[in-house]
Length: 561
Image (cartoon, rainbow, N blue to C red):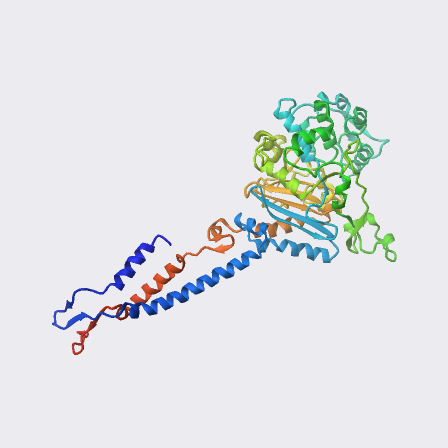
């Protein structure tokens, strides 16, 4: 009962108690007490109160029946400030794209404050615990920073400390063919910081095509050397045959970096990369489905893969008019076409930049939960120090006095139409409002960024179509898993899904009025409603019913003077 209940009860008792003395008026017209039956006096109020009680009980029963239809995740979602029904709109969004043959399947998961609030799989070949190819760079970064926490390495260490051959790199000066290529010596040492921010100057190895012929030449040379095996020094020595596009720290281009950092980790620890991951990251976080290989008893969980292909492919002259290389840029439109994939059933002996790394939605959310919790696993075990988490999740580009919105710094801003640099919101011409943490992308100006999230939101994406982002301001993480390549075939996927997820959040001001999705009863329950009814009856002419004062017969009450 609300705090005003005792006051209501006092007033109620006052009205139910007949006066014990008569009142006299100045004109000697006497009013005297006319006692009435308590039952007759209170019966109408009791009836009205019973009706109000019945209605409140009925509403409560209906609300409970609705709650029985809520899943356990729905209940958790509403406890953590989400409208569970609105969250279901994400499934409608996926179904719409699936019907248009643009999205064969997807796994979506949302977590807040370390608890899962939404987890669904939509489409054929996808289940909630589907195993998908993900970006390995964030976990490699975390593994390296764990060594920094122990004092065994430094973020600004020069790479030549671990790979001496990197001193032999040269830097592009001029030339558009291999025969006319001219280079300059390396003047700025390459550091681990440069590697973890893709600013070390190595040409691009992602499928993007520059509009500048010199960059296209260097990218081609880099892709021919993009398979160095972690733990093999000779493979990394061969990388020095490819000129850097500029001095380290001067240009941003996504390319070969995770394999180099992985090789450094192995040199420091003397262990294989899978061993380091298990000991330092995946083991403490319980990421049981995260590895380079997928065990034979889990292979049925691997999500089906597709790639964007012209809708006329294999129809009439479709291949001739719009070859599959055109993909989502085909002027005739595109559809998602199944693609073959071979996954090894054990950890591969040799790991390179292109070795697929697998994980699940829950494993990725577990990793992001650790970052949101300043380096602590849910078990309480410390994985990283807060300082290392800061390096990963906060924009580090101010150190270089630049940003991704700078077209001279961001080489992807001049990529050709249809390639990642032009259409992807993660890098290139539309990367304004974004910065770089170590191994992560960071939103630093939400009003300009095409990546959804509050300021400080950090994320990692994979070329194969998976992404996970975390919004520290809202203590929330979102996983998107769709094995469609190239992932920028849906350049606004994150924005559209984020619009639905963020739109399902109940504002702080409104959330206090909800308990498990039900409006809080501010009337004080049925007892409070009964007292309210009786108070209203007493105010609107109810005194005669309450055994109050009535004129005696023959003694009319005085009228207005």
